[in-house]
Image 1 (cartoon, rainbow, N blue to C red):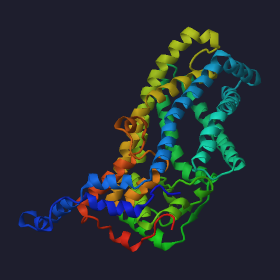
Image 2 (image 1 turned 120 degrees about the vertical axis):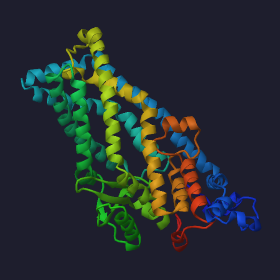
Image 3 (image 1 turned 180 degrees about the vertical axis):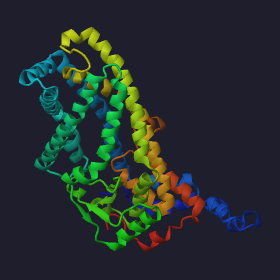
Image 4 (image 1 turned 135 degrees about the horizontal axis):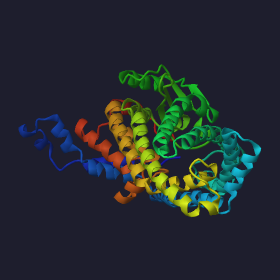
Length: 446
């Protein structure tokens, strides 16, 4: 699948980005600076427009329809999550589950286990219709998924199992905090949530991700060696590159540099290998290395901690107010009562929904930083532009500023291409590709 349309047309159109200065003017004594000459030769705005205009209209419309549909799905996912919580509270199903668990055992821990497992199953079942539409039928409708339903459903059950085990352990610790510190639980609860997220970062690459995909060493040294060269130059402690068999699930291209404390791993999916040239792969991998080198994992954990602290503080106020007013009707006794879990979920998912623009902006800023690191490391402006167009298959290329602020957790294709063209104007002669681009003319679909 290609989002590029006619790349040759795009690259030819870049000539329209050349300024009106004549060669005599460029070579005049007043314009001796190479950087000045380069910036005069390439108009980044015109070059960006040429890249965007290279995407056929029907593909642009399909991409826009897919991404804009996600705006409504964001709303519907919130309505479903909120509706489930309200249903469990108003119907007293949550209180009945709590009563059932108390009849089974007197251990607080086992009571919570007996409550959480049915709770997770109920949420999974009630939300399943929207889940199957959003992540199976809709992905197939837009040509982004490759799995059949039985295979997809097996992975959903695997995810359910992981969520049940991990969620139960997390809630056992959190409710222990509720019981021991009912007045200051929002402070200690933040510490528990942040530590759990940190622990997940360590175990996910080693124990969770291999449950869904197979990781094998990348055998092609023409691809792996340039990646390892960039890794060594940036002090990333890896000795090999891994390939992920993502094509059995999706047509999307992706890669990552993940892990800490000895679990660091560079991985790229096989779609990236099949659909992209070496310059494009270098651009993607340099971006991913940017996340690692710039410590974005630690920074996002800090941001997450601040958000959770504020969210828990607001949740404490709202939870206490709701229990005071409706607690008897719902059968919720207080913060340490498992029957109040749907109320906690309702309040927190509402805060999360309202904070969507802020959270997206935080992530988008880190992605922008990784883009800047990546282009300075890989020095592949055209490769970066082509990858941005490929990502445009499922991400709107040219949104309005308001759309990008609210809904984009990555820079838009337009913003990324403009960064690449700005860099090219400052660093390379107009219309000249980096050396690796000319040495590796492989294009997607060839």
